[in-house]
Amino acid sequence: METTFSFSKSKLLKIQLPESGRVTYKDSEVKGLQLRVSYTGTKSFLVYKKLNGKPKRVTLGQFPSMTVEHARKNAQQEIAKMFDGIDPNQAKKAKRNRGVTLSQCLEDYFLVHRRLAESTKLDYRSVIKNNMSEWMNRPLLDIKRNDVAAKFRHMSADKPATANKCMRVLRALFNFAHGEYEDDMGNPMILDNPVTRISHNREWNKVERRQGILKPNDIKPWWAAIDRMVEAEPSQHDTAGTLADYLRFVLCTGMRRMEAATIRWENIDFRNDCMTVVRTKNKKPLTLPITSYIKEMLKRRQAEKVSEYVFNGRGTAHLKDPKKAFDRVGEICGIRVTAHDLRRTFISIAESLDISPYAVKKLVNHSMGGDVTAGYIVWDVERLRAPIEKINEYILKQAGAIETAPVVSLENKRKKTI
Image (tube, rainbow, N blue to C red):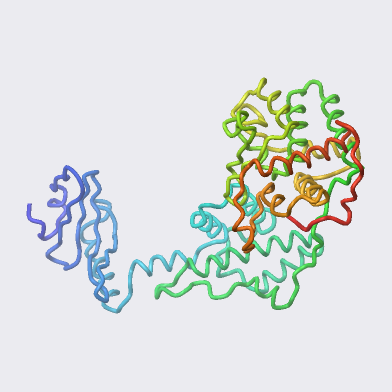
């Protein structure tokens, strides 16, 4: 069959599907109108024409849903646009961009930033849903500076820290939108970031950084409250026992909440007494020595393991919501801390014991930043064994699990470290 002929319904219906790939046919009536036939059975009308020396293909629709007459009419319209220097594909994209909503922008942001941790994605979604739900289906172009300023002031009255966080997320999305969405001339669709009004007026809330920590004299009652939590819930002994181990594990390793919750048995190496956390905040695997106390805990848990995770939740999943355990322990002893407070406690204890700042950073997987000296240090997991054993010994002595240690005040040695 000739590849160039006068399109008609009867002729197009007779076209046989290729065995593989696709074949293109050209209409002799309207120059530039084509029909692309795929081996899968799809027959699509399209326009092919060069614009500024570059080939452009514009898909019109599928045959036979789109008739030959309709295809010719649409093709002539698209060709006319290209004669005027307009790229129809860019115009279609621009039309979609003009209607992009806050919710769509968030999903596009995640598609582009594929390496974002799932916890970060959940956090961003939560921020938008809980604080800007009325804007989720609103086009970005309709969110103005006055709207943002009014919302920020309203939120700041009751939740200044949340207001700051909410606006930081919104600012990130608008910065992303500026580079992502273009008009039909290829220029940025979003020219203004409405959150800049807050910076211009210097309205950001001054929020004191959290300094929660387990003080030396708090460790023993908090540690004992964990045992009381297990004893008070005999019907849920397995769950309570897992939570108890998890709380102590976080304190004795300084790991982040989800780093500890998602650690797998396959990442535990008893032969070399070390463990590796794969899912970390900075995407860099963290390998730590297993201390004597942690090894005893892990061996006990391994003998009764029910899933691939060290700290199992329901079924075969990992532990999901340790917050309830922190709340329960807090109710028992009156000392309320979070997982991050335990991490802060671990770091503060390390500093109080005069452990090298470089070793502390490696233990908690913090970046060395632009420290030139740190770049010359070759780290091996064994170099961290003595420091982490020393920290664990201090914690266990303060907890009353072994002989009492001399009290070292952490009050004046806190580090503003996250």
